[in-house]
Length: 358
Image (cartoon, rainbow, N blue to C red; front, side, top):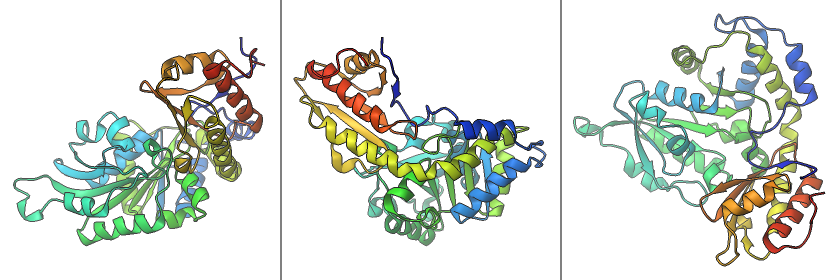
């Protein structure tokens, strides 16, 4: 049996810190559906300020945050949103924009760095003179960092170019910013500058920031007023939600400064894995806290087998397909955990290194 656990499945697996637990226990709360929870109000005010937007809204999850944002912008059924074919909204959110909102997804190919070619975005916009035939394009969605591209960051310059296309055609721009603080830290750019061109942004509190629950949507005051109503419709209105928001306020204060350390550990792991015969990591793609590991042909193992073998050492991973594994760093992974994980990878793949799980 392993004597330690190194959980690299996702940055969603963190446990609340002692400071978070204390803040949650002592949170000043009221009924947020009635708009009176003071701790939730503090979080929403702080997040709107940080992101450079007029207002903010706490919601239970990132999926609901993106769903509400898309539905507010595309408030007529049969509207169309342009988004990446490898984006989180398109692949991992249960098709909610279509099944619940009646919004048609029009995909554009994501490049390896998570971007979509600007000319392809513009070409995907429907001709408004043919609205009798086509859905009406109303929204463009970006994702920063881009999860399926390995946590790659979209630059200010790229985002602003997409924003210019949106304005030119009278469209709105939404950013799925589940890990937008990771992008800000990695690029050395203030987070409000990264999202300045966006009409709305969803920010996850329980990924890189390590809070236990929730996301925040930011945008204009009129956008958030509509979002609040839709949140209620979807069952996302909660009562003494300040208990959760208190932990998020601690995360904003304590964890944002830890993100660069997460990124460094990810690069350390990536470099070490490339020294292990049978494994490969494209280190140029490791910009933030996500590492994709490729199992080379002829290595004698598979993603499922290697993940199971490493689980016996207490190292938890997420296999993707037959030959790829994803690992994600968070603030509760130490430098020692990285070295331990590398030793376990070496043992599991080549039979050398740590032999007893200590």
